[in-house]
Length: 427
Image (cartoon, rainbow, N blue to C red; front, top):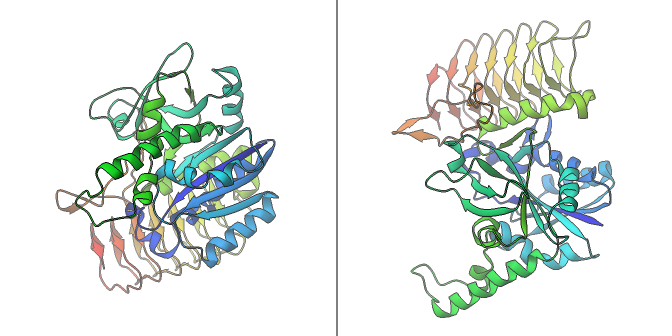
């Protein structure tokens, strides 16, 4: 019997994903036509003998999350539950806090997946790898190869090339350690809780010795239970014959910023050719011109003279007028793209309107296409006091009048503009 745990975080994180995360919890943001989390759940549900999927985070339960869980349970015929943390406990603290729920039913192993990654999720391959390498009670990290410069932004893994054992692990090192990076997807067995428990006990002792650290006095249990898998557990386990790395050649990316959501959408849309061909639009008589991979929700109303693609996702109830051009973009629920407007490298927010002949364009933040190991850079909003050129984001209920041009800008909700903007955050 197997289980899966998906770590969904909480509202105070994901600042690079704003303003999109103002309207919907980041894990429910649609990527390639379905909520980000659904890609994880689909992959877990396909693994034989998977009995339950647990979501752990500190979002307040709300109608949208509850509805998503209900629909996912109905579609995938598997138990899916949300376990709410009382505070941010870290990647290790969350699973340790709910360890009784995870080990209930005596699963032989369980997966842990970070919600903000995009992947082919080779979970069955990780299971086979675990049986072929190391001891039965070993743990497996999914790894991939990055270039030397970008590896510094991730957890770096030094392996024994013959056995794939992790000999050394460093989270975001200051100098080059290895080009094998941590993908945020793990295969554990219940023994992992003994190792997390050791860190928890040490934290408790430290709280007794150093009860005040200059901050507001807090509950010692809370601080002791805040544990990070990467720095606190993997670093200690490396070199002990317990931790192994399975390196994937399939696609993988983080989804930290809005620009990375468009890149992730491209990766998933391309994967649909083998996993969900029915989700990909095709050229049909009386329909819009489709170029490359495009997802169109059945409720969208699109003029046959529009041209969509490549890498376009059209959400529920979207209206697209005559002569509209959309490329490398995500168009969210209820948006209205009026005749002859152009949308490139952008995310158009819920119920927003783009007027006739308007142009909304951003700068793509894709990895270097000439480097097979390049990953997407999750840029900060500002660099040297200026807005970093990136994709254009229109928040909820934004109206772009006719013939206005918006370039590399972020427009927050409920704005009605009457002139052109470039490299601006419009509050």
